[in-house]
Each structure stands twice: as structure tokens, then as C-alpha cells.
Length: 396
Image (cartoon, rainbow, N blue to C red; front, top):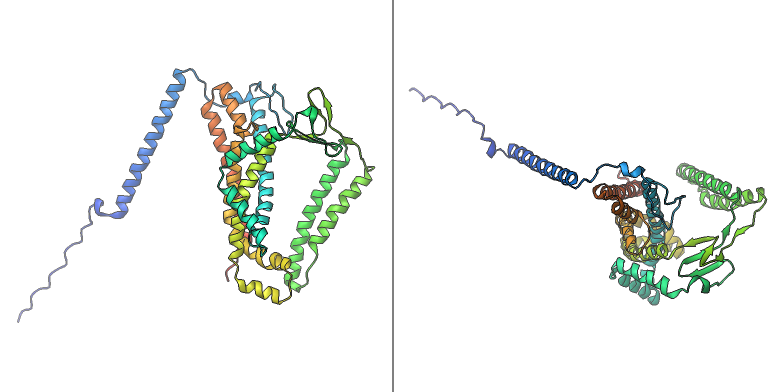
């Protein structure tokens, strides 16, 4: 009996591209790229045409021209005869100054308040909680206005300045205090201190390796602290123990000499630190509460004091939870420093705005502001991410 021939399989045909998910995705991406590119070209061409029609020059050649405006605060020498480039550099340094000092003070204050929030003392805990709720719920700009008004309303004019101790004056022009007179001893002391800190860091690394290999600890911190106090003091003695002071004196309508911390800088720093430290305190509290209660009880059972439990058991583990959100708060403080223009502190945004008003280079000015704050943010993120990797637990 003849068997029927087996039917041959139908030849497979590739589906059309509109039914292939991978090909559709490539088409959509290409269309999106064309649309974005076309939109970008349209905006660029339209901007160029408008600038040419209004006879507005483009480019960064204006940076070499004379700025012709003064800046009240500067970490480097500056006058109105300097270029716009140097004026913008002064603004960058002013922003870095308030941001760097603010981040350090915010971290310290936020950590203290976060720990106090968990205190078994009812009054301390309630005060910390009240501080957090108050500062978090008042916009930072209003806080800056408040502290700026306090500095100008609470303190008298320079001629009636408060003088609580010799060499210190408080008035509405700022906080003026005496500083050591210029002498070669002080730069030498600074270099010695820097060398001690670098040496202490190297000794600390060596001590950790030694402890991992032998189990014996090495007092690297105490040695570094002692050297950081003793060696600069010996350097000061070596240069003849200079004791001359640069004292502030009233001349005309203002003080001359000494060092002055302006009301604008003080209000900006105080507002940023108090506002951001409230958020840092909550981050610290959450990090501490993430540690198992059993570890704390075990540490206390070993005879560790509460301070030692916090330093040796709780904080090293809590840092792994604290660091990522803490990085965000550091970035927020740096970006919020741009509000300085509202109270007259000459940060980078204020200097850039003045430059834009005088030159008409709005696009270049705004672009520089964006780039500068992008660099600040990325630098902070890179450092904190590096530190976070060092603190992270290594999986085995």
C-alpha cells in the first residue's frame, strides 16, 4: 500500500519590519534623533539670525575687556580695571568659599542634631525635633531675608559698634576682628600643618594594615593630633614667636584693618547651614535607626560606653546608609547658594548677571553659569561616590 508523501514544510518568510520590535525600535530612535536635531538646528539658526539682526556680537571675546565694576568681597586682588574673566573668577571663588564652609558646618550641625533627635532625654529630643520641623518648613529664601534683616537691624552703625572684647567689633557693616599681622611664620606653619596631615593619613593607612596582619592597633589619630599642635607651635617659636596683631580701627565712616565678615556672607552662610542641616539631621537619624538593636545591646554587653558604641559600632555602619542622601543635600546647598543674589552677596551668579547687563552677552553668561554649577555638582558627586565605595561592604 502506497504511503502518502509527507508534506514539505512551508518556507519561512521574514515578517515585515513594522512587525519586528527590534527594527521598529531602530526606526523610532532614528526619527527621534532627526526631530531633536532639526529642532536644535532651528533654534540655533533662529538665535543666530536674531542676534545678527540686533547687531549683538557672539563669542567670549568680552572676557578680555575691562569689567568696570567693583566687587565688595574677594579672595584674590581685584579692581574695576581688571577683566571680566577675573571678575568671574572672583565670583567662582566666592561661591566655592560659602559652599565649602557651608558643607562642613552643615555636616557637623546636622550630625549633632540627628543624634540629639534620638536622645533618651525628652527635652533634648523635643528641641531637636522642633528645630527640624521649623527649618524644613520655612523656604530657604525667606530664611536668608530674615537673617539679612537681623544683621542690619540688630547691630548698630559703625560709630556705635559693639565692642565686647578688645579687637572685636559688631556693627551693621559686619563682624570685624583682629588678625595676626603678616609674617613669614604663618605660611610656614600652614605648610607644616599640611605636611603633618598628609603624614598622618599615611600613618593611619599603615596602622590599619598592621592591625589587619597582627591584630595590634596603632594610635595614629593621637599621634597626628599631637604633631598637628606641636610642630606648628615649634615653627612659630623658630621664627621668633611673632605676636603683632593687625587691629581694626575706626577711620572715617568705616573700620580699617583686621578682618571683616560681611552681613551678606554671614546671612547666606547661616541660612544655608540651618536649612540644610535640618534635612541632614533626618538623614543621620534614619541611618542610625537602620542599625539592628541587637548590635547596640551586644556592644553595651561588652562594656563599651555609650560614646564608644556610637563611635565604634553605630556610625561606621550607619554611614553606608547616610552617604547617598547626604550627597544630595550637599549638592542642594551648593545650588541654593545661587540665592545669594537676593541679599547682595557677590557670588558667581551675581557677577555673571552684572556682566550680562553690561555686555549683552546673555547666552554666553547663562551658559557659563550652567557650566560652573555643573562642574561644582559633578565634582561633589564624584568625591562622595568615591567615599561611598570605600565605605560599602565588600561581598564575599
